[in-house]
Image (cartoon, rainbow, N blue to C red; front, side, top):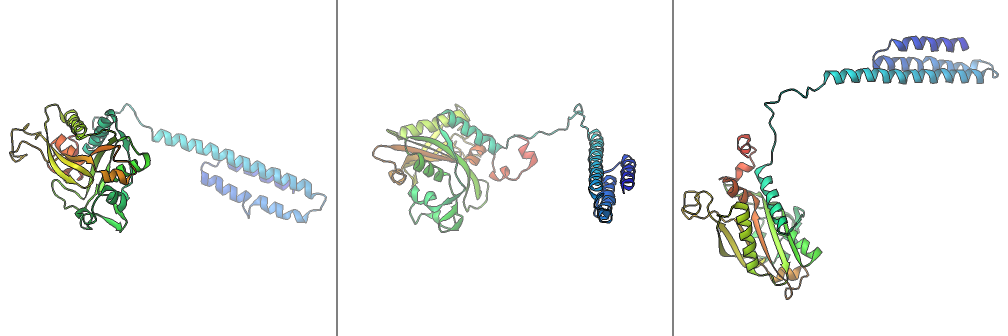
Amino acid sequence: MKEKLFGIRNDFKNLIKDANTIKEIDDLRVKYLGKKGEITAILKGMRDISPEERPAMGSLANEVREEIENLIENKKSEVNKILLDKKLLNERIDVTLKTDNLILGHRHPLKKTLEDLEDLFTHMGFTVYDGPEIETVENNFDLLNAPKDHPSRDMSDTFYFDKNTILRSQTSPVQIRAMKEYGAPIRMVCSGRVFRSDEVDATHSPMFHQLEGLVVDENISLANLIETLNYFVKTFFGEDMKTRFRPHYFPFTEPSLEVDTTCPNCGGKGCSSCSGTGWSMELLGGGMVHPNVLRNCGIDPEKYSGFAFGMGIDRIAMVRYQIKDIRMMFDNNKKFLEQF
């Protein structure tokens, strides 16, 4: 049996030298160490030798098996290294290769507008907050002082999961969450996607983007809101841009207003883009936070007051880049996007 073990070891050493692939190595492993392999057969034959010889033969068989296992692992490492070297050679990248036709990506006009808006308000002392797109009816309507019969609550206007859960129709619920968690004073902006059951046309989409701002502190007045919005418009669009404030109604602000800006195409002279009025489409809305909203969030309206404003980022981008159709920003048209 000893001679047979030495013979197996020598035969394996000769064969493993010529193995050049992982498959050939595995075939040798099965042949010598498998369930029906030669080493296994030797171990099964141990019962045929005398009890006195078994320990020595068992120890020798284990040594031969361990030597074969080590040879297999070493050979596998050697073959794998050769294969890796060949792969690296074949897949080598020439970093000096000219790339005149390389097309680099860039910020989408919506993303760029959003980031610039957040940067501007951050520099004005606002903190950026975030919130979920799936909201409660309470946060989206009830705590914002929206009447039970308000049209925006209808299923034809808002996407409902059930009677208590919706896709948020505005980013205002983030303001509710922030006031409930942090109280007053607070100065914040929040942005993100919102969803409304709108018909798709040049200026409307069932999914669009909003940015809203909120300031709550002692002695906050409408003058603070107007100055904040004027500063925003002139900083973002240019010093020549003028604003026009019109009375409006929002359930969560009182008094409320809407803001128009000078038409960017004609500079206020009147053209076809602004229907001869000299003013662009409504840019944003705002007002003084309704006392009920403050009270709903645990803030004393006798001590604190505040203002809030909201704008469609898509519409801001349309004014900023003079885009006439909101759908162009979602079509992923390469020719359109390359302009930015």
